Structure formats: C-alpha cells, structure tokens
Length: 182
Image 1 (tube, rainbow, N blue to C red):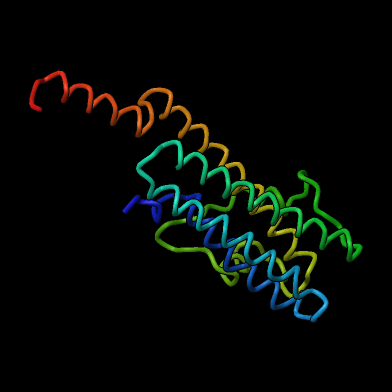
Image 2 (image 1 turned 90 degrees about the horizontal axis):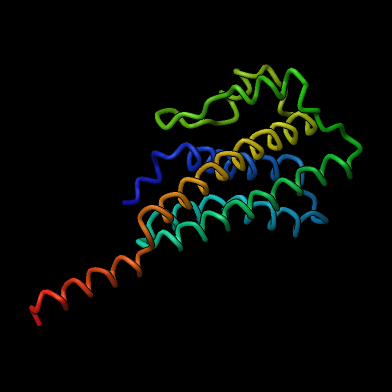
C-alpha cells in the first residue's frame, strides 16, 4: 500500500467526508437541496479518494495530479459551506475568532480518528447549530487545503530531485541496453 492511511492529510479528509455526510443529513435534508447534498458529499469523497489514488500511483506526476484534484474538490466543498452560511444569513467566523484559533490548534491523529463527538467535547461548540457546524467545516477545510498545499510542494520537490516514473524507467532501459545483455 501507499501508506496513505498514515498521512495526516488523509485522516483529515476522512473526517471531512464523514462530517459532511452528517451535516447534509442534519441541515440539508429537504428535497430542494438534493442536488447540493449530492455535490457536497461527492466533493468530500473525491477529495479523500484522490489522495488515496494518488498515493498508490507509481508515477510522481500522477500523484501530483491526483493530489491537485483532491485539493480542487476540497476547494469546491469550501465554497458550498460558504454558500450555506451566506444563503442562510449566518455569520462566518473571522480568522481572529477564538473558536477559529482553537480549531486551528486541533490535531488530527492517525491512532484516534476525529468524529463529531470528540470535536464537540474538545471545542465546547453546539453542533446542532448549523452556523457552528458550517464554520467548523470551513475551518477544517482551510486546514486540509493548507496540508494539501504542503503535500503538493513536497511531491513537486521529489519530482525535481528524483525525476518521474517514465524518466527513471527510460534510464534503466538505456542502462540495460548499454550493458549488452540483449
């Protein structure tokens, strides 16, 4: 396996997917939101699954591409939560809000995945309140996007220093041909 289960960015993606399903069931269950629910859940799933698929690729180039697709999916999901807040005349927490600062300090763990109950206990927020829940998701998506940006930079650096799959395979082929073992 690609070891993606041990990546912090993957664990947070799992949390975002699971919490998006909960959010949609709680606050967007009316028929008029059917398409929005599908889009939000699929964006959260796509973000998570592209991290998995990319990490399993032999090609660093494909890994970078799929990580970028995951990043774009979480960007789309972020806009959905911002739309929810705007369309329901709710307030988005400013970056200086103590709740945002507290959430930014929250650490995802591979050994104990996040769920709504331990986030509720840790943050002391009422997640039956749609404004709190949507703002939580916005904070977590910002964190995920930051982590994905860091992962993309590391993948690009690896590509620059080690080359790509095709390039390295060609070098092996050339070496084989030059060795005269044909």
